[in-house]
Length: 203
Image (cartoon, rainbow, N blue to C red):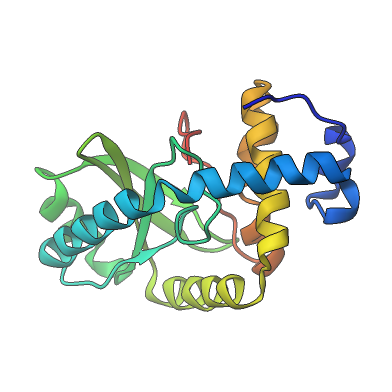
């Protein structure tokens, strides 16, 4: 799809959000069509997510939650899966051992001003799956945030957000793209610090 745009991407990325008023009628129609085309990937990704979630439940005994772009319906065609679990901090060494032969440990990442999460990765049918083990409190907060996004973010907002995300990636503005992906979380849960996983720019 064409990446030509009349949007002022510099102003939009500085503002951290896009609205219908930023769009011409023709460009919004393009954005709507693009959003619909991304939904065509949902059935396959949702089936893979169900399989990945079952594997994680078996490995960890914890119920995972989609904390990524598929869960917020902001995924691109190349999006990976991002799942999260709540897990006791004092049992993290054991979790690393449990997952050692099943995943690649990507390290510890900041989640908020005072807490961190462990990040693991594995592949399922050619799709990358990132698993974040958050503190149990952070996981509860994340679930509430995701529920709020699900309930209050409109389809129009999703269309606008995804179109900007597509434009930034297509034009090679990788740093802006990485920051833009996190704007939805920051808007609904400012205290969280969803730091991008290095060299992971597909979701």
